[in-house]
Length: 252
Image 1 (cartoon, rainbow, N blue to C red):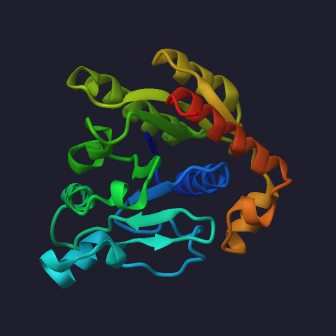
Image 2 (cartoon, rainbow, N blue to C red; image 1 turned 90 degrees about the vertical axis):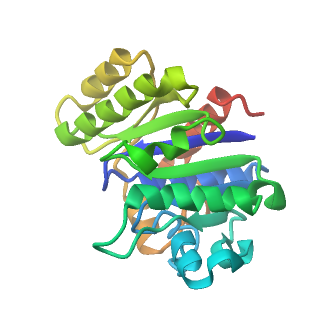
């Protein structure tokens, strides 16, 4: 099984990248599960046509110990098993603790075994990397962390913090840094900044996504590129990233 996490600043397009990678890997024969680890519970929206699925924490609050896999999973048209961790009631509880509870519930229900999963993607908010937000990095969850960033100052700042956290955690047996994914915003010196970021942490830019109209059009159509524009440059760029991730994670 390949297990990896995508981290990045909020709004950088991480969930769009994650959903498109999930659909591409599913099309290549992998049984994929995408787990959204953002309290907004919108990571898998493109995969499920924005159909609402109960977040794990919502289901736990409603059903307690009687939660089943069918209560918290959704099989997309692309064959991806979609899960959203969810978050606490606004103003109450800890979002990080919510991620811990959600992942522990999936373990308890043997979700990976029941669905025969061989590729797991954790989509994690990267503005903070403490507590539950570091949970997918921990031993037994993701094996590699890939950071989605643009060349914008705050995006690079968040990406550097994530890379630093991965580096600090490595001695605990946590996930290692797999590489940087450049999601272009067409700012000055974008390529240079991202290459410098990668060098600073001993890794590389494993793929680049141009700011192309097909990506925005697919999102408006509530679809992944595999279904909306499979022959587009955007699709091929993300397909290359998916293939590089599989290679780095030791998949076939």
